[in-house]
Image 1 (cartoon, rainbow, N blue to C red):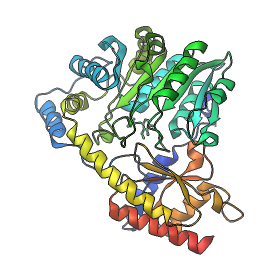
Image 2 (cartoon, helix red, strand yellow; image 1 turned 30 degrees about the horizontal axis):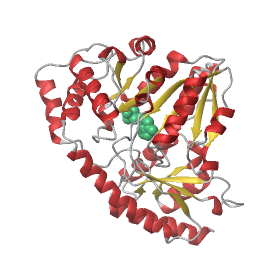
Image 3 (cartoon, rainbow, N blue to C red; image 1 turned 45 degrees about the horizontal axis):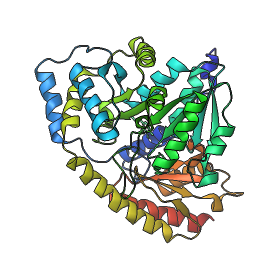
Length: 391
Ligand SMILES: Cc1ncc(COP(=O)(O)O)c(C=O)c1O
């Protein structure tokens, strides 16, 4: 078998793999508690669906400009101005097939084989594989040593002349950590001093629990704005994972290069989804607030349940919909890795959760609370049973 060197050691997505295994079990009527998914369990709001149906009926079904329709680009700029205090024009934006593609386009356009990209572990599973796909080398800075927060000295120590970029994600998947303004300002200074690029993945921006506040690094000054690619999308905020709409804002000439990646790979994203996205961005915030309130209730419920289990610790989430639980006390001869634990949990206890190793944090397990209270309760009871019977 001959395969490209760049793809030789690219791994699968554990999140997608476990979720699809669990869904498959469910379709065979096996009672699995699925606490693995990275998607809201709510349905897309009706107003958004209606616009998509209208688009189909009106025959809005052809290619659009690769970077997106004008009306959507204008709305994305308005959103960046109002929510993030960043001034972008349509020429600074590309709408893509999910935030995942936005990140991929930027990495492909800007990274080479002799470059390095800094990732802060735990990181979203796809960053590391996407970096490998460019031929660049991922350089991992472990934030678990600093309560999952930004340690400027540690990041500084990993910068050298090959460093092309750093990827940050706040609110974070899998920890739920939200970076403070101070942390981000310090990081912004470091990025500017070293003249490297930054991808700021802000996809969970609106799923945030008071008193935490979201800050966009690109909003601090013109210099950091030109070096940063602000990524966002509709998947999490509007329960639109399957519609595949993400977008990125950045410096015009660099964005042009990223646009070429999209032009020659997928062209525009779905015209129908773009119409739906216009409706989503025009919705008032109440829908998102209601969804976040529901996540908040589940978050508290889940934290209380986990606290009752001896030996488990967790990172208190400030945003997103995941609880990152420390299982290191239970690693040993029987279960060497968090993957061993998650495999046993799925096969014998019928609960689907994601091993921390996939996020660069061995010994942890990510529990998603984008699931009903009933499902959460069932899942945690099974985890408790697993610990009693196996440890
Ligand atoms: C941190 C992070 N970034 C990006 C994405 C991708 O989102 P999209 O559905 O817009 O491609 C996800 C999805 O799980 C995510 O967790």
